[in-house]
Length: 566
Image (cartoon, rainbow, N blue to C red):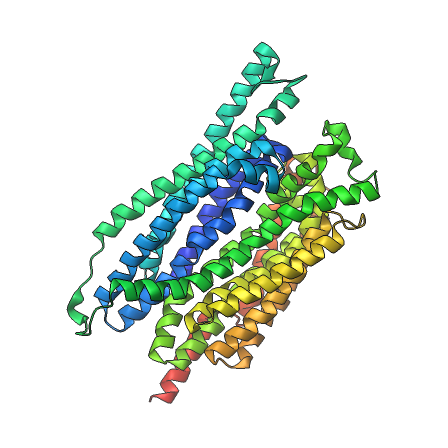
Protein backbone atom coordinates (compact mmCIF):
# COMPACT_ATOMS: atom_id res chain seq x y z
CA UNK A 1 0.00 0.00 0.00
CA UNK A 2 1.48 3.36 -1.06
CA UNK A 3 2.03 5.79 1.79
CA UNK A 4 0.48 9.23 1.74
CA UNK A 5 2.61 12.30 2.45
CA UNK A 6 1.89 14.47 5.47
CA UNK A 7 0.22 17.18 3.39
CA UNK A 8 -1.83 14.68 1.38
CA UNK A 9 -2.85 12.77 4.50
CA UNK A 10 -3.69 16.04 6.21
CA UNK A 11 -5.76 17.15 3.21
CA UNK A 12 -7.72 13.88 3.30
CA UNK A 13 -8.41 14.12 7.03
CA UNK A 14 -9.16 17.85 6.96
CA UNK A 15 -11.56 17.27 4.07
CA UNK A 16 -13.19 14.53 6.13
CA UNK A 17 -13.46 16.83 9.14
CA UNK A 18 -14.98 19.56 6.98
CA UNK A 19 -17.68 17.18 5.75
CA UNK A 20 -18.33 15.52 9.10
CA UNK A 21 -18.44 18.81 10.97
CA UNK A 22 -20.88 20.24 8.44
CA UNK A 23 -23.05 17.15 8.87
CA UNK A 24 -22.49 17.31 12.62
CA UNK A 25 -23.79 20.86 12.77
CA UNK A 26 -26.80 19.86 10.69
CA UNK A 27 -27.36 17.16 13.33
CA UNK A 28 -26.54 19.18 16.44
CA UNK A 29 -28.47 22.36 15.64
CA UNK A 30 -31.94 20.78 15.25
CA UNK A 31 -31.17 18.33 18.05
CA UNK A 32 -30.47 21.24 20.40
CA UNK A 33 -33.68 22.93 19.31
CA UNK A 34 -35.66 19.72 19.85
CA UNK A 35 -34.20 18.80 23.24
CA UNK A 36 -33.74 22.30 24.67
CA UNK A 37 -31.48 23.00 27.61
CA UNK A 38 -33.13 20.33 29.78
CA UNK A 39 -32.77 17.55 27.22
CA UNK A 40 -29.24 18.61 26.28
CA UNK A 41 -28.22 18.34 29.93
CA UNK A 42 -29.18 14.62 29.77
CA UNK A 43 -27.52 14.15 26.37
CA UNK A 44 -24.32 16.00 27.27
CA UNK A 45 -24.22 14.43 30.72
CA UNK A 46 -24.47 10.94 29.24
CA UNK A 47 -21.59 11.64 26.87
CA UNK A 48 -19.56 13.24 29.68
CA UNK A 49 -19.88 9.94 31.57
CA UNK A 50 -19.29 7.81 28.47
CA UNK A 51 -16.27 9.54 26.94
CA UNK A 52 -13.76 8.86 29.77
CA UNK A 53 -14.71 5.18 29.64
CA UNK A 54 -14.36 5.10 25.87
CA UNK A 55 -11.04 6.94 26.12
CA UNK A 56 -9.74 4.36 28.58
CA UNK A 57 -11.01 1.47 26.47
CA UNK A 58 -10.06 2.50 22.95
CA UNK A 59 -9.25 6.16 22.33
CA UNK A 60 -5.48 5.63 22.50
CA UNK A 61 -5.64 2.59 20.25
CA UNK A 62 -5.57 4.12 16.73
CA UNK A 63 -2.47 6.24 17.31
CA UNK A 64 -0.64 3.46 19.19
CA UNK A 65 -1.47 0.81 16.59
CA UNK A 66 -0.68 3.26 13.79
CA UNK A 67 2.75 3.92 15.27
CA UNK A 68 3.59 0.24 15.77
CA UNK A 69 2.32 -0.85 12.35
CA UNK A 70 4.14 2.03 10.66
CA UNK A 71 7.33 1.09 12.46
CA UNK A 72 7.06 -2.59 11.45
CA UNK A 73 6.28 -1.71 7.84
CA UNK A 74 9.27 0.64 7.63
CA UNK A 75 11.42 -2.34 8.68
CA UNK A 76 9.73 -4.71 6.19
CA UNK A 77 7.93 -6.85 8.81
CA UNK A 78 4.40 -7.20 7.45
CA UNK A 79 3.54 -10.39 9.33
CA UNK A 80 4.59 -8.80 12.61
CA UNK A 81 2.36 -5.84 11.78
CA UNK A 82 -0.53 -8.28 11.27
CA UNK A 83 0.14 -9.76 14.70
CA UNK A 84 -0.26 -6.34 16.29
CA UNK A 85 -3.64 -5.98 14.59
CA UNK A 86 -4.75 -9.40 15.80
CA UNK A 87 -3.70 -8.60 19.37
CA UNK A 88 -5.61 -5.32 19.19
CA UNK A 89 -8.80 -7.06 18.07
CA UNK A 90 -8.67 -9.60 20.90
CA UNK A 91 -7.64 -7.29 23.74
CA UNK A 92 -9.77 -4.27 22.95
CA UNK A 93 -12.78 -6.20 21.69
CA UNK A 94 -12.95 -8.07 25.00
CA UNK A 95 -12.38 -4.94 27.06
CA UNK A 96 -15.08 -3.01 25.19
CA UNK A 97 -17.63 -5.79 25.71
CA UNK A 98 -17.00 -5.88 29.46
CA UNK A 99 -17.16 -2.10 29.85
CA UNK A 100 -20.34 -1.85 27.78
CA UNK A 101 -22.10 -4.28 30.10
CA UNK A 102 -20.78 -2.42 33.15
CA UNK A 103 -22.00 0.96 31.88
CA UNK A 104 -25.47 -0.34 31.05
CA UNK A 105 -25.82 -1.97 34.47
CA UNK A 106 -24.54 1.14 36.28
CA UNK A 107 -26.53 3.65 34.20
CA UNK A 108 -29.07 4.31 36.96
CA UNK A 109 -26.42 5.03 39.59
CA UNK A 110 -24.42 7.25 37.22
CA UNK A 111 -27.50 9.25 36.25
CA UNK A 112 -28.52 9.83 39.86
CA UNK A 113 -25.12 10.33 41.52
CA UNK A 114 -23.05 11.97 38.74
CA UNK A 115 -25.45 13.69 36.32
CA UNK A 116 -28.03 14.38 39.07
CA UNK A 117 -30.88 13.71 36.62
CA UNK A 118 -32.40 10.25 37.30
CA UNK A 119 -34.09 10.04 33.88
CA UNK A 120 -30.70 10.46 32.20
CA UNK A 121 -30.14 6.73 32.84
CA UNK A 122 -31.80 5.91 29.53
CA UNK A 123 -29.39 8.18 27.65
CA UNK A 124 -26.39 6.69 29.48
CA UNK A 125 -27.48 3.14 28.62
CA UNK A 126 -28.14 4.04 24.98
CA UNK A 127 -24.83 5.84 24.47
CA UNK A 128 -22.96 2.95 26.13
CA UNK A 129 -23.90 0.69 23.21
CA UNK A 130 -21.55 2.78 21.04
CA UNK A 131 -18.48 1.47 22.87
CA UNK A 132 -18.17 -1.98 21.28
CA UNK A 133 -18.42 -1.01 17.58
CA UNK A 134 -16.31 2.12 18.17
CA UNK A 135 -13.49 0.11 19.78
CA UNK A 136 -13.35 -2.41 16.92
CA UNK A 137 -13.52 0.47 14.42
CA UNK A 138 -10.46 2.02 16.02
CA UNK A 139 -8.48 -1.15 15.32
CA UNK A 140 -9.33 -0.91 11.63
CA UNK A 141 -8.51 2.79 11.56
CA UNK A 142 -5.19 2.39 13.37
CA UNK A 143 -4.19 -0.38 10.95
CA UNK A 144 -5.04 1.67 7.87
CA UNK A 145 -3.27 4.77 9.19
CA UNK A 146 -0.20 2.71 10.07
CA UNK A 147 -0.17 1.40 6.51
CA UNK A 148 -0.03 5.02 5.35
CA UNK A 149 -3.61 5.58 4.19
CA UNK A 150 -6.03 8.00 5.80
CA UNK A 151 -8.83 7.17 3.33
CA UNK A 152 -10.55 4.40 5.38
CA UNK A 153 -10.62 6.64 8.46
CA UNK A 154 -12.04 9.53 6.45
CA UNK A 155 -14.67 7.45 4.65
CA UNK A 156 -15.84 5.67 7.81
CA UNK A 157 -16.11 8.97 9.70
CA UNK A 158 -18.28 10.43 6.95
CA UNK A 159 -20.51 7.33 6.84
CA UNK A 160 -20.85 7.31 10.62
CA UNK A 161 -21.76 11.00 10.73
CA UNK A 162 -24.26 10.70 7.88
CA UNK A 163 -26.07 7.78 9.53
CA UNK A 164 -25.99 9.60 12.87
CA UNK A 165 -27.56 12.61 11.19
CA UNK A 166 -30.49 10.53 9.93
CA UNK A 167 -31.12 8.23 12.88
CA UNK A 168 -29.95 10.65 15.56
CA UNK A 169 -32.65 13.12 14.52
CA UNK A 170 -35.40 10.78 13.33
CA UNK A 171 -35.57 8.77 16.57
CA UNK A 172 -35.85 11.72 19.01
CA UNK A 173 -38.28 13.43 16.64
CA UNK A 174 -40.48 10.34 16.85
CA UNK A 175 -40.31 10.41 20.65
CA UNK A 176 -41.29 14.08 20.80
CA UNK A 177 -44.15 13.58 18.34
CA UNK A 178 -45.40 10.75 20.54
CA UNK A 179 -45.25 13.11 23.54
CA UNK A 180 -47.22 15.79 21.67
CA UNK A 181 -49.90 13.31 20.62
CA UNK A 182 -50.08 11.88 24.12
CA UNK A 183 -50.50 15.36 25.61
CA UNK A 184 -53.22 16.22 23.07
CA UNK A 185 -55.19 13.11 24.04
CA UNK A 186 -54.48 12.64 27.76
CA UNK A 187 -52.78 15.87 28.95
CA UNK A 188 -49.75 13.85 29.93
CA UNK A 189 -46.89 11.71 28.64
CA UNK A 190 -44.56 9.04 29.99
CA UNK A 191 -46.73 8.65 33.07
CA UNK A 192 -46.68 12.33 34.11
CA UNK A 193 -49.45 14.94 34.03
CA UNK A 194 -48.52 18.06 32.04
CA UNK A 195 -50.22 21.46 32.18
CA UNK A 196 -49.13 22.59 28.70
CA UNK A 197 -47.30 21.44 25.57
CA UNK A 198 -43.98 22.96 26.67
CA UNK A 199 -44.03 20.95 29.89
CA UNK A 200 -44.86 17.80 27.93
CA UNK A 201 -41.85 18.34 25.67
CA UNK A 202 -39.58 18.95 28.68
CA UNK A 203 -40.90 15.73 30.23
CA UNK A 204 -40.14 13.81 27.04
CA UNK A 205 -36.70 15.39 26.54
CA UNK A 206 -34.69 12.74 28.52
CA UNK A 207 -36.31 9.96 26.48
CA UNK A 208 -35.63 11.84 23.24
CA UNK A 209 -31.99 12.23 24.31
CA UNK A 210 -31.81 8.45 24.82
CA UNK A 211 -33.32 7.89 21.36
CA UNK A 212 -30.64 10.09 19.83
CA UNK A 213 -28.02 8.08 21.72
CA UNK A 214 -29.38 4.91 20.12
CA UNK A 215 -28.99 6.59 16.73
CA UNK A 216 -25.34 7.31 17.52
CA UNK A 217 -24.75 3.66 18.46
CA UNK A 218 -26.42 2.44 15.26
CA UNK A 219 -24.26 4.82 13.20
CA UNK A 220 -21.09 3.36 14.73
CA UNK A 221 -22.28 -0.15 13.88
CA UNK A 222 -22.91 0.80 10.24
CA UNK A 223 -19.45 2.40 9.93
CA UNK A 224 -17.90 -0.73 11.45
CA UNK A 225 -19.55 -2.90 8.79
CA UNK A 226 -18.05 -0.66 6.10
CA UNK A 227 -14.54 -0.81 7.61
CA UNK A 228 -14.72 -4.58 8.11
CA UNK A 229 -15.70 -5.10 4.48
CA UNK A 230 -12.95 -2.75 3.31
CA UNK A 231 -10.21 -4.42 5.36
CA UNK A 232 -10.90 -7.75 3.64
CA UNK A 233 -10.18 -6.12 0.28
CA UNK A 234 -6.78 -4.78 1.35
CA UNK A 235 -3.82 -6.61 -0.06
CA UNK A 236 -0.08 -6.38 0.49
CA UNK A 237 2.85 -7.48 -1.60
CA UNK A 238 5.25 -9.25 0.78
CA UNK A 239 8.14 -9.06 -1.69
CA UNK A 240 10.10 -6.78 0.64
CA UNK A 241 9.36 -8.88 3.73
CA UNK A 242 12.48 -9.42 5.83
CA UNK A 243 13.45 -12.83 7.08
CA UNK A 244 13.38 -11.86 10.73
CA UNK A 245 11.35 -13.83 13.24
CA UNK A 246 7.69 -12.78 13.45
CA UNK A 247 6.54 -11.09 16.66
CA UNK A 248 4.46 -13.45 18.82
CA UNK A 249 0.93 -12.67 19.97
CA UNK A 250 2.09 -12.19 23.56
CA UNK A 251 4.92 -9.86 22.53
CA UNK A 252 2.58 -7.87 20.30
CA UNK A 253 -0.02 -7.59 23.04
CA UNK A 254 2.47 -6.41 25.63
CA UNK A 255 4.04 -3.81 23.36
CA UNK A 256 0.64 -2.65 22.16
CA UNK A 257 -0.52 -2.10 25.73
CA UNK A 258 2.72 -0.29 26.61
CA UNK A 259 2.10 2.07 23.70
CA UNK A 260 -1.67 2.39 24.03
CA UNK A 261 -2.09 2.77 27.79
CA UNK A 262 -0.19 6.08 28.04
CA UNK A 263 -2.04 7.31 24.94
CA UNK A 264 -5.32 6.26 26.55
CA UNK A 265 -4.31 8.07 29.73
CA UNK A 266 -3.83 11.22 27.65
CA UNK A 267 -7.24 10.71 26.06
CA UNK A 268 -8.86 10.06 29.44
CA UNK A 269 -7.28 13.19 30.84
CA UNK A 270 -8.56 15.17 27.85
CA UNK A 271 -12.10 13.86 28.31
CA UNK A 272 -11.96 14.63 32.01
CA UNK A 273 -12.40 18.27 31.03
CA UNK A 274 -16.02 17.57 30.13
CA UNK A 275 -16.39 15.48 33.28
CA UNK A 276 -14.99 18.37 35.32
CA UNK A 277 -17.63 20.67 33.82
CA UNK A 278 -20.33 18.08 34.52
CA UNK A 279 -19.51 17.79 38.23
CA UNK A 280 -18.62 21.45 38.88
CA UNK A 281 -20.69 23.74 36.64
CA UNK A 282 -24.23 22.93 37.96
CA UNK A 283 -23.38 22.95 41.71
CA UNK A 284 -21.16 26.04 41.39
CA UNK A 285 -23.91 27.83 39.46
CA UNK A 286 -26.33 26.96 42.27
CA UNK A 287 -23.89 28.56 44.70
CA UNK A 288 -23.61 31.68 42.52
CA UNK A 289 -27.41 31.98 42.31
CA UNK A 290 -27.69 31.68 46.09
CA UNK A 291 -25.12 34.47 46.45
CA UNK A 292 -27.02 36.67 43.97
CA UNK A 293 -30.69 35.58 43.64
CA UNK A 294 -31.28 37.81 40.60
CA UNK A 295 -28.64 35.93 38.59
CA UNK A 296 -30.32 34.12 35.66
CA UNK A 297 -33.71 35.28 36.94
CA UNK A 298 -34.80 35.76 33.32
CA UNK A 299 -35.13 31.97 33.06
CA UNK A 300 -38.15 32.12 35.34
CA UNK A 301 -40.07 33.81 32.54
CA UNK A 302 -39.36 30.77 30.36
CA UNK A 303 -41.11 28.46 32.82
CA UNK A 304 -37.84 26.99 34.14
CA UNK A 305 -38.02 26.33 37.88
CA UNK A 306 -35.20 27.48 40.15
CA UNK A 307 -34.18 23.87 40.87
CA UNK A 308 -33.83 23.16 37.15
CA UNK A 309 -31.89 26.27 36.13
CA UNK A 310 -28.34 25.05 36.73
CA UNK A 311 -29.01 21.93 34.64
CA UNK A 312 -30.61 24.04 31.91
CA UNK A 313 -27.61 26.41 31.84
CA UNK A 314 -25.15 23.50 31.76
CA UNK A 315 -27.05 21.91 28.88
CA UNK A 316 -27.05 25.22 27.01
CA UNK A 317 -23.30 25.67 27.53
CA UNK A 318 -22.40 22.17 26.36
CA UNK A 319 -24.97 22.06 23.57
CA UNK A 320 -24.26 25.48 22.05
CA UNK A 321 -20.99 27.10 23.17
CA UNK A 322 -18.89 23.93 23.32
CA UNK A 323 -20.28 22.77 19.97
CA UNK A 324 -18.91 25.88 18.23
CA UNK A 325 -15.68 25.81 20.27
CA UNK A 326 -15.06 22.16 19.37
CA UNK A 327 -14.93 22.86 15.64
CA UNK A 328 -11.37 24.24 15.79
CA UNK A 329 -9.51 21.52 17.77
CA UNK A 330 -11.37 18.81 15.84
CA UNK A 331 -9.86 20.14 12.62
CA UNK A 332 -6.31 20.52 13.90
CA UNK A 333 -6.30 17.20 15.79
CA UNK A 334 -6.25 15.52 12.38
CA UNK A 335 -2.82 17.06 11.73
CA UNK A 336 -1.30 15.11 14.59
CA UNK A 337 -3.00 11.95 13.35
CA UNK A 338 -1.72 12.42 9.79
CA UNK A 339 1.86 13.28 10.85
CA UNK A 340 2.14 10.24 13.15
CA UNK A 341 3.03 7.56 10.51
CA UNK A 342 5.63 9.80 8.87
CA UNK A 343 7.09 10.94 12.19
CA UNK A 344 7.17 7.39 13.60
CA UNK A 345 9.02 6.10 10.54
CA UNK A 346 11.50 8.98 10.72
CA UNK A 347 12.13 8.37 14.42
CA UNK A 348 12.54 4.61 13.85
CA UNK A 349 14.94 5.25 10.95
CA UNK A 350 16.93 7.92 12.80
CA UNK A 351 16.24 10.59 10.17
CA UNK A 352 16.59 13.66 12.37
CA UNK A 353 16.22 16.10 9.45
CA UNK A 354 12.86 14.57 8.47
CA UNK A 355 11.74 14.65 12.11
CA UNK A 356 12.50 18.36 12.44
CA UNK A 357 10.82 19.12 9.12
CA UNK A 358 7.67 17.19 10.08
CA UNK A 359 7.38 18.92 13.45
CA UNK A 360 7.86 22.36 11.90
CA UNK A 361 5.25 21.75 9.18
CA UNK A 362 2.71 20.39 11.68
CA UNK A 363 3.13 23.34 14.04
CA UNK A 364 2.83 25.88 11.25
CA UNK A 365 -0.28 24.32 9.73
CA UNK A 366 -2.05 23.88 13.08
CA UNK A 367 -1.33 27.50 14.07
CA UNK A 368 -2.40 28.73 10.62
CA UNK A 369 -5.80 27.06 11.10
CA UNK A 370 -6.35 27.67 14.82
CA UNK A 371 -5.46 31.36 15.05
CA UNK A 372 -7.96 32.88 12.59
CA UNK A 373 -10.69 30.39 13.55
CA UNK A 374 -10.37 31.06 17.27
CA UNK A 375 -10.15 34.80 16.66
CA UNK A 376 -13.41 34.70 14.69
CA UNK A 377 -15.11 32.97 17.62
CA UNK A 378 -13.81 35.69 19.96
CA UNK A 379 -14.94 38.48 17.65
CA UNK A 380 -18.40 37.17 16.70
CA UNK A 381 -19.83 35.06 19.57
CA UNK A 382 -23.34 36.52 19.41
CA UNK A 383 -23.52 36.38 15.62
CA UNK A 384 -22.29 32.77 15.48
CA UNK A 385 -24.81 31.65 18.10
CA UNK A 386 -27.59 33.42 16.22
CA UNK A 387 -26.42 31.84 12.96
CA UNK A 388 -26.36 28.26 14.23
CA UNK A 389 -28.96 28.27 17.02
CA UNK A 390 -31.62 30.79 16.01
CA UNK A 391 -34.25 28.33 17.26
CA UNK A 392 -32.88 28.47 20.83
CA UNK A 393 -32.64 32.20 21.66
CA UNK A 394 -32.86 31.71 25.42
CA UNK A 395 -30.03 29.16 25.45
CA UNK A 396 -27.95 31.27 23.05
CA UNK A 397 -28.22 34.38 25.22
CA UNK A 398 -26.60 32.49 28.10
CA UNK A 399 -23.58 31.52 25.99
CA UNK A 400 -22.47 34.80 24.36
CA UNK A 401 -19.81 35.87 26.89
CA UNK A 402 -18.53 32.32 27.60
CA UNK A 403 -18.12 31.65 23.86
CA UNK A 404 -15.90 34.74 23.45
CA UNK A 405 -13.44 33.31 25.99
CA UNK A 406 -13.73 29.83 24.47
CA UNK A 407 -12.36 31.34 21.25
CA UNK A 408 -9.06 31.91 23.07
CA UNK A 409 -9.13 28.35 24.37
CA UNK A 410 -9.77 27.11 20.81
CA UNK A 411 -6.51 28.68 19.59
CA UNK A 412 -4.48 27.08 22.37
CA UNK A 413 -6.16 23.68 22.11
CA UNK A 414 -6.02 23.74 18.32
CA UNK A 415 -2.21 23.81 18.47
CA UNK A 416 -1.66 21.67 21.57
CA UNK A 417 -3.66 18.63 20.40
CA UNK A 418 -1.43 17.86 17.36
CA UNK A 419 1.64 18.33 19.58
CA UNK A 420 0.30 15.86 22.16
CA UNK A 421 -0.42 13.29 19.44
CA UNK A 422 3.02 13.74 17.86
CA UNK A 423 4.68 13.06 21.23
CA UNK A 424 3.70 9.41 20.82
CA UNK A 425 6.12 9.06 17.90
CA UNK A 426 9.07 9.80 20.19
CA UNK A 427 7.91 7.58 23.08
CA UNK A 428 6.65 10.48 25.21
CA UNK A 429 3.11 9.17 25.68
CA UNK A 430 3.30 9.35 29.47
CA UNK A 431 4.48 12.95 29.31
CA UNK A 432 1.46 13.82 27.17
CA UNK A 433 -0.85 12.22 29.74
CA UNK A 434 0.77 14.10 32.63
CA UNK A 435 0.51 17.44 30.80
CA UNK A 436 -3.16 16.88 30.06
CA UNK A 437 -3.83 15.92 33.68
CA UNK A 438 -2.08 19.08 34.87
CA UNK A 439 -4.29 21.14 32.55
CA UNK A 440 -7.39 19.33 33.84
CA UNK A 441 -6.38 19.97 37.45
CA UNK A 442 -5.92 23.68 36.70
CA UNK A 443 -9.36 23.79 35.07
CA UNK A 444 -10.93 22.05 38.06
CA UNK A 445 -9.41 24.54 40.47
CA UNK A 446 -10.40 27.57 38.41
CA UNK A 447 -13.95 26.23 37.91
CA UNK A 448 -14.35 25.92 41.67
CA UNK A 449 -12.91 29.40 42.17
CA UNK A 450 -14.53 31.42 39.37
CA UNK A 451 -18.00 29.98 38.67
CA UNK A 452 -19.43 30.71 42.16
CA UNK A 453 -18.51 34.39 41.69
CA UNK A 454 -21.62 36.16 40.33
CA UNK A 455 -19.45 38.41 38.14
CA UNK A 456 -18.15 35.31 36.35
CA UNK A 457 -20.83 32.63 36.64
CA UNK A 458 -20.88 30.45 33.53
CA UNK A 459 -18.07 32.53 31.99
CA UNK A 460 -15.77 31.13 34.67
CA UNK A 461 -15.89 27.71 32.97
CA UNK A 462 -14.74 29.29 29.70
CA UNK A 463 -11.97 31.33 31.36
CA UNK A 464 -10.67 28.22 33.11
CA UNK A 465 -10.66 26.38 29.77
CA UNK A 466 -8.57 29.14 28.16
CA UNK A 467 -6.02 29.25 30.99
CA UNK A 468 -5.66 25.46 31.23
CA UNK A 469 -5.31 24.99 27.47
CA UNK A 470 -2.69 27.74 27.29
CA UNK A 471 -0.66 25.94 29.94
CA UNK A 472 -0.98 22.61 28.10
CA UNK A 473 0.20 24.22 24.86
CA UNK A 474 3.36 25.62 26.47
CA UNK A 475 4.22 22.24 28.02
CA UNK A 476 3.38 20.18 24.91
CA UNK A 477 5.30 22.34 22.44
CA UNK A 478 8.39 22.41 24.67
CA UNK A 479 8.26 18.64 25.22
CA UNK A 480 7.88 17.97 21.50
CA UNK A 481 10.93 20.10 20.69
CA UNK A 482 12.98 18.29 23.34
CA UNK A 483 11.69 14.84 22.43
CA UNK A 484 12.36 15.11 18.70
CA UNK A 485 15.59 17.07 18.94
CA UNK A 486 14.10 19.76 16.73
CA UNK A 487 15.54 23.26 16.77
CA UNK A 488 13.97 25.81 19.10
CA UNK A 489 13.39 27.95 16.03
CA UNK A 490 10.48 25.58 15.28
CA UNK A 491 8.57 27.35 18.05
CA UNK A 492 8.81 30.60 16.13
CA UNK A 493 6.57 29.25 13.39
CA UNK A 494 3.68 29.38 15.88
CA UNK A 495 3.82 33.17 15.72
CA UNK A 496 4.00 33.44 11.91
CA UNK A 497 0.19 33.46 11.33
CA UNK A 498 -0.32 36.10 14.05
CA UNK A 499 -0.19 39.16 11.78
CA UNK A 500 -2.37 37.61 9.03
CA UNK A 501 -4.89 36.52 11.70
CA UNK A 502 -5.05 40.10 13.00
CA UNK A 503 -5.68 41.31 9.45
CA UNK A 504 -8.40 38.68 9.05
CA UNK A 505 -10.29 39.84 12.14
CA UNK A 506 -9.85 43.52 11.33
CA UNK A 507 -11.33 43.03 7.85
CA UNK A 508 -14.16 40.79 9.10
CA UNK A 509 -15.06 43.15 11.95
CA UNK A 510 -15.04 46.16 9.64
CA UNK A 511 -17.31 44.37 7.16
CA UNK A 512 -19.68 43.30 9.95
CA UNK A 513 -19.84 46.79 11.48
CA UNK A 514 -20.20 48.81 8.30
CA UNK A 515 -22.22 46.49 6.04
CA UNK A 516 -23.97 43.74 7.98
CA UNK A 517 -25.10 45.28 11.28
CA UNK A 518 -27.04 48.14 9.62
CA UNK A 519 -29.03 45.56 7.64
CA UNK A 520 -32.17 43.90 8.97
CA UNK A 521 -33.95 40.59 8.51
CA UNK A 522 -32.36 37.41 7.21
CA UNK A 523 -29.18 39.14 6.06
CA UNK A 524 -28.41 40.26 9.62
CA UNK A 525 -28.39 36.60 10.70
CA UNK A 526 -26.41 35.10 7.83
CA UNK A 527 -24.26 38.16 7.14
CA UNK A 528 -21.57 36.96 9.56
CA UNK A 529 -20.73 34.26 7.02
CA UNK A 530 -19.96 36.96 4.46
CA UNK A 531 -17.91 38.93 7.00
CA UNK A 532 -15.83 35.87 7.88
CA UNK A 533 -15.43 35.08 4.18
CA UNK A 534 -13.99 38.57 3.63
CA UNK A 535 -11.63 37.98 6.55
CA UNK A 536 -10.50 34.65 5.11
CA UNK A 537 -9.68 36.30 1.78
CA UNK A 538 -7.57 38.95 3.52
CA UNK A 539 -5.91 36.24 5.63
CA UNK A 540 -5.06 34.13 2.57
CA UNK A 541 -3.62 37.13 0.71
CA UNK A 542 -1.45 38.07 3.69
CA UNK A 543 -0.19 34.49 3.99
CA UNK A 544 0.81 34.54 0.32
CA UNK A 545 2.44 37.97 0.55
CA UNK A 546 4.41 36.94 3.63
CA UNK A 547 5.23 33.51 2.07
CA UNK A 548 3.80 31.61 5.04
CA UNK A 549 2.68 28.09 4.07
CA UNK A 550 3.67 24.45 4.65
CA UNK A 551 4.45 24.22 0.93
CA UNK A 552 7.18 26.81 1.40
CA UNK A 553 8.44 24.76 4.33
CA UNK A 554 8.60 21.73 2.02
CA UNK A 555 10.50 23.68 -0.64
CA UNK A 556 13.03 24.99 1.86
CA UNK A 557 13.51 21.50 3.28
CA UNK A 558 14.03 20.01 -0.20
CA UNK A 559 16.59 22.68 -1.18
CA UNK A 560 18.46 22.08 2.06
CA UNK A 561 18.56 18.32 1.37
CA UNK A 562 19.91 18.93 -2.15
CA UNK A 563 22.58 21.26 -0.80
CA UNK A 564 23.65 18.67 1.75
CA UNK A 565 23.74 15.84 -0.84
CA UNK A 566 24.89 17.36 -4.19
